[in-house]
Image (cartoon, rainbow, N blue to C red):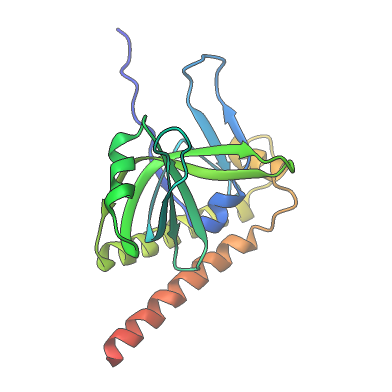
Length: 204
């Protein structure tokens, strides 16, 4: 009996780490095999889940509608997403939403190389929904926990040990110029910004 393909878990990640995730790979030669981006903290991601502030939308299409959305996380770092005729629900949300607004986005990472040879990372959204501040705050706390877990696993890994998690080894090889400490700092910055917002709200 053929097994039913299951949808990949949508990984929670802050924009700084997501934008550094420039390496993609497949785990089989099958044309329909999922494409993964490799997070620098050593986890593969075929889908991501983010919540942040939609700050800008723009139709950047030439012949048909092709919407760009910018979503900013608590650190001020930006996720870019693009939706066109093949993502009609997401495109219509980007057309209708009035920034600034808190949004939750589930989508697939996409990479493309610029003329200068740099790799840019964006999201092809499967769904976009407007959410409240409490939902955004919960996402920040849970994403902080997941990121710290990944950083801890990465730091404790022995790269010389053949039994080390393959994605951590891959990240060590592909992203040797990146400091894992950057992503711990993203966590600290995001949580501090939440505390500042809450302090301001209680002072009003």
